[in-house]
Length: 278
Length: 61
Image (cartoon, rainbow over all chains, first blue to last red; front, side, top):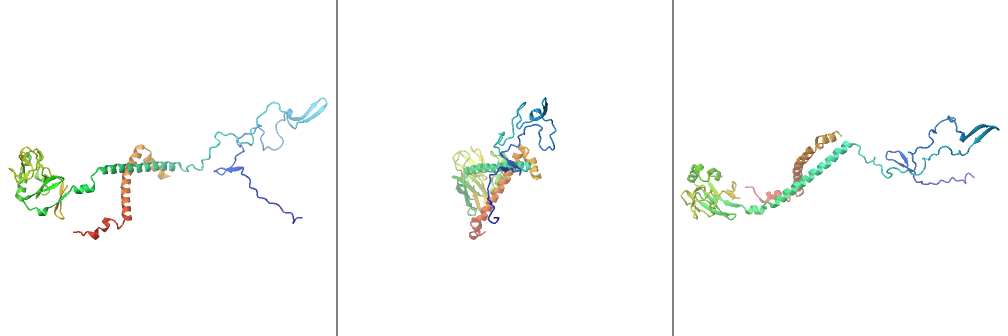
């Protein structure tokens, strides 16, 4: 018989009645552990007979005229008070029943968290500030002249082809530019002039980077005529329109013009002996 | 932890200091970013740029 009897084992997957909190404590969802059982001092866990006096209505032995009567109520009659039974198996209505447990997501170190938050805010600030800065600079850069325009705006002059004591007139940005290779006498004369008493006081050193070469715009500062070279009372330039005399440094000495002849931006390239205007 | 608190107490506690340090670091960041990107560009295009092949065509006088 024993050989034929086989214990039937059957695996049953029961639905979980208890879920586990993230803290590891099992939590029976449907049992309201917070409910207080009724009954006042009827605490469990005592041992021995009950210490309080049993009320009359719950039975007991009474003495009557016909002798002792023992009464035992299986169901005690309800007399003085009734109470609501709070312990029950249905889910209790909580204040906010669907709020999940966030304790697993809370930062372990609040100060680290705070520093990280400020760091991220600051980094975003740094990024956006640099983006704003380069946006503005790039936009302003679009207004600047492009490289080809700048290259066109420059003129190179080979100085070795200009002999001493000669004038050369070249065109630069639509205007004539005078270049004079001055002789030592002329340099001496330009430097020795008492320039402080002139109409537009300017020293020769301020007008010519290299005293040998005088570079200036050939436009009369009076009304914009082009003066004639090696002419005039001061051995420099003479404007035929209204008779302005410029000296060998291009300074106005006589006539209606108010200012000296303008000196453009230029520099000497020492490698190949060229003059770059612009 | 100590570093985080130092960071918060020295930089982030006062907004004036915070904003000032943001602008100051923007200055440094922009320079570093530009230079880093230029360096990356040069490495990526090594041998293709004019400054890399200039010596083949131009002889220094």
